[in-house]
Image 1 (cartoon, rainbow, N blue to C red):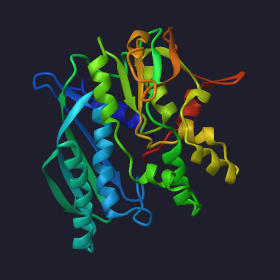
Image 2 (image 1 turned 90 degrees about the vertical axis):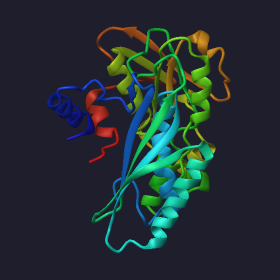
Image 3 (image 1 turned 45 degrees about the vertical axis):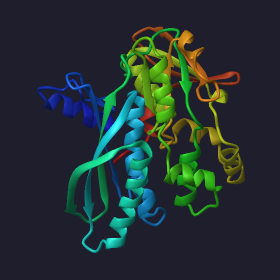
Image 4 (image 1 turned 120 degrees about the horizontal axis):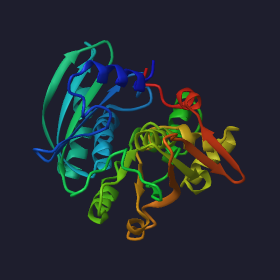
Length: 316
């Protein structure tokens, strides 16, 4: 059973479910955004390939990425830890050194949390952000004619994870992309200052196609991208060539890039720095038959539900 199936069960079990489904919940009466992400040992990270310091940084940054996608300014976090009995003091100290470093960088305060015992390390962070834009960013706001923009480069993090998992050599930039992601708060702030209506923004933590597919379903539009316009690192191409892999599979299906995927009017796009925001496609007709179309030279790939379920990241 996949995440979307569990979400359907949760929604059907709750009397009030307006906030369920989006990565951030916005409390209009308080102008605050809430998000929570959990990292589980041997599901989201391995202590053989990361350090407590990097784990602390990543645990905070993955939540800040969700706030960036909501056009929110991060203010506070709370942290819940589940730790095995034999966890050392130095592990906790290094974990919080990483957490504190990120918090100092973005002016965030740690306001509490919880510590419990567990068979494996689990770190769950709740992040609170302040509304800074007059307009909302949600996955169902995509409109016909919107351009599809992305920040950063795609596929690097999943290639880094692939290398670590298979004991293969990879350039440091790929390993860093996986172990020490950077939330796109700068780009989010720029976007918030330019938009003039509600827009669609998602982070790509579960993969580029994952985000496109969910936006398509939520907005009931078809979305079309040119895979060759998606920014990628030369190191990703080198790694793929060296190991007889198709780098475009990392780009399409690899997660943990923590980039932003944006659907916005063309006139707003014209106000943005093309070095920070790259156009990769368009939102097409609203036909109540949403789909994702990926153009690759003279071939067009239509992403079906079966293909999505087969290739998208499985949290379970």
